[in-house]
Length: 219
Figure 1 (spheres, rainbow, N blue to C red):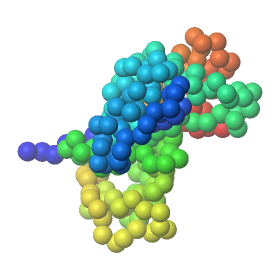
Figure 2 (cartoon, rainbow, N blue to C red):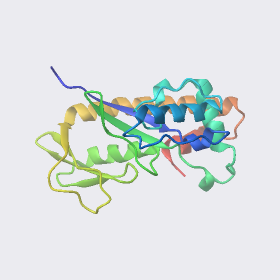
Figure 3 (spheres, rainbow, N blue to C red):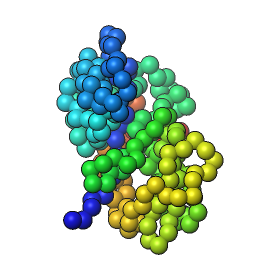
Figure 4 (cartoon, one colour):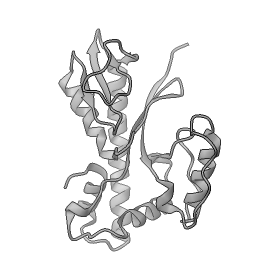
């Protein structure tokens, strides 16, 4: 049986940004109690009117772009921008999230702390560089390193170090990964069009520019 590789672009929706009341945390880590953490997350989101999110990874706060409805996206954008000085581009933060890499339905890579959706550009740059020695890719921290060997894209462990261990944690077919990235970029472009449309309908000034900053972090 062929193993399947696919990449999903996601937003990270922090529960504290959407909750109206304090809720008790699950009694354990997201690894030990993934379902309980998802229930906690969805309960917080529901207090801002978001009730149609499907968790992308158990125990994590990620929503796949293609599965976010327009009504939910409107809430996300309004929440993101409500306390932002839109007259100063430096004050506008990119949407949190990034790319998730699945292999046989197992999430091998997903955004870490301080990541943003715009981090997809780091993957593009790396594929263009074709590194044969370890090259860092920012996905938040801890980070990951990749290199190309024998038409395979090799991945390091997650690390905060300046260099990873010599041995790769896993590898995938380079061509297949590159094709998946192309498909992912198309999804992000479509998502940006949706963002711009919702901003325009919400009477935000310069919706095209604002959407570009939110999605691509182009201050």
